[in-house]
Amino acid sequence: MQAILLQDVDGLGEAGSVVAVARGYMRNYLIPRGLAEEATAGRVAEVTRMEERRKALEVKQAEQAAEQADLLSRTILTLKAKAGDDGRLFGSITSENVAEAIFEARQVKVDRHKVLIDPPIRAVGTYEVPVELAPGVEAKVKTIVSPLLD
Image (cartoon, rainbow, N blue to C red; front, side):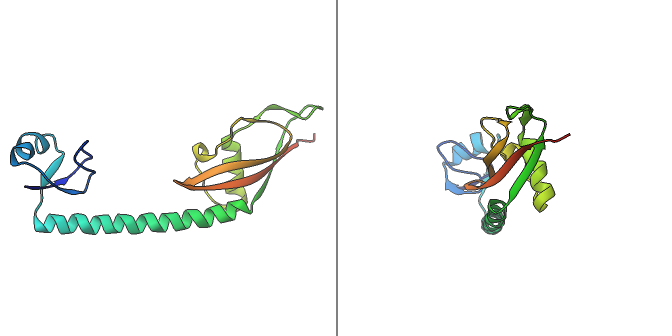
């Protein structure tokens, strides 16, 4: 019997895939738990179309992420923070500060959780801050931290 998986099932397949299963397994386990439905010709065609649309969307998003990565790689951010005479900051530059500076400079909205500052920036200087734009697409943004002059 053919089944279309509605959710990922360990040892069987991923959501959206068409698999062959025993009739009893389908009737007693997969359907009652909402894990699968019977594969009809119309439903298989619909799942195939949805999968093609999803893949096209992923390609488009990957292209956009690559364009943004190129743009951000050419970006130089200047952040000002209160610092002592020795160049150490009174606090630190956070991923949220960098994400806001990126938006102000290039109008590219970046989730602060995707700005990977490790260890935290706690001194005046120049840093390469990695920003993850999509899975496998990362840009390094040159960030200059300078002391805030009163």
